[in-house]
Image 1: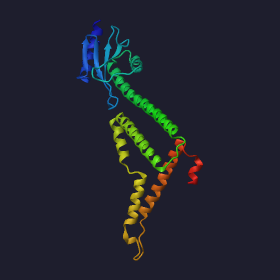
Image 2: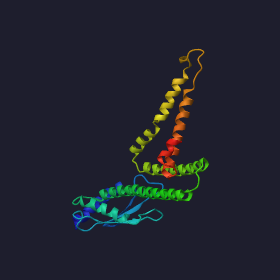
Image 3: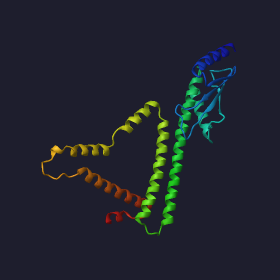
Image 4: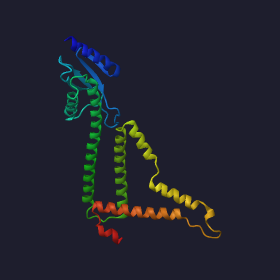
Length: 257
């Protein structure tokens, strides 16, 4: 028994130095640690109390692990608690014979971070399902109605805006789940010029030097021609693609336009 108490006292002392604000000693044989992921999600924040009770045979057996919700904080959803606890018990089993509380707490933080990613995935799947249902309902509602350019442009603008908003939210959640190093790499990639920007920049340089033209030769604005041509092709491809997705035209119709 004396060895058991000495082991706990030594481990509690180390834990208090690691979790000075998060740890609370509930008794001589139990503690509570506030756990939350390193990177919180704005749309799916989560924080829990990790409760550890130490049996007399610890650390030769794993402690009793439980999770409690924190007032005014988002907790676990249905089925998530069992997933997290099973993961923590598996980690604890690998550490039998040594102090394992810090390892369990670290695994709990990682488990909550994975929950955030999983929640975002499920929400995306739900959004995709609703989008499909919306498209099918719209197709059924307008089936048999003559398609005009005005109607199509109105629908396309609304649909594009909705999809853009969803993708921006998904991107924000994905970036927030990254660690600082990964976020910095993402930021650098984001700041790199796109292929189109490089092309337009090159076109600007190629046409900005008047010394390249012979005197008396009429200057041709290649930038305007290239952009208009590319923009017209892009709009046509987008309209053809949207029509095919909605079932409004067949693949052959696009070629006959």
